[in-house]
Amino acid sequence: MKNSVRAFLVVVAVALAGAIRLSAHHSFAAEFDAQKPVTLKGTVVKWEMINPHGWITLAVSGPDGKTTQWMIETSNPNGLMRLGWSKRSLKFGDEITVEAFRAKDGSNTANAATVTLADGRKVFAGSSGTPSGTP
Image (cartoon, rainbow, N blue to C red; front, side, top):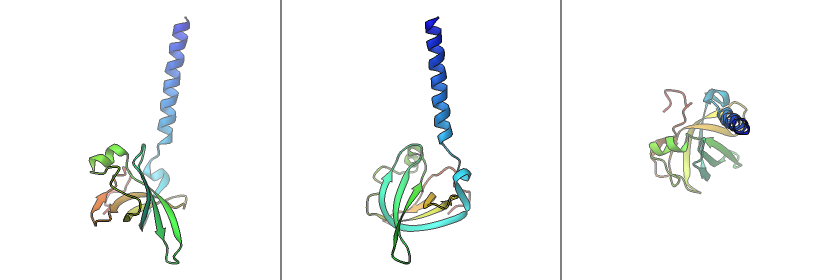
């Protein structure tokens, strides 16, 4: 009887852990606005190729000379690797341009569609929610 109770508790714990993991993931439309495209030109501060999404921290200088940090979401590591990305694709100090869509909450967060790298190559950021017809 003790073994069946333990087995039941393990099954419940695993199911709850899976539910928590799934609820942490979001859809593009839940967080980003396809009607608010933004072009960000700046310097890479940090590149994280992590699950569930990669993140680029970008220092962007405004017209007033003030620098603002943006958090730019990309696809997951597996999707990025299939597109040719690696952990070495971006380095601290690289000058890049990101075509993205702004967060609905007005924060300096965006979902990347394409990234123009320091060498001029334009690469897809692989984000699953990027609206169709994106350059």
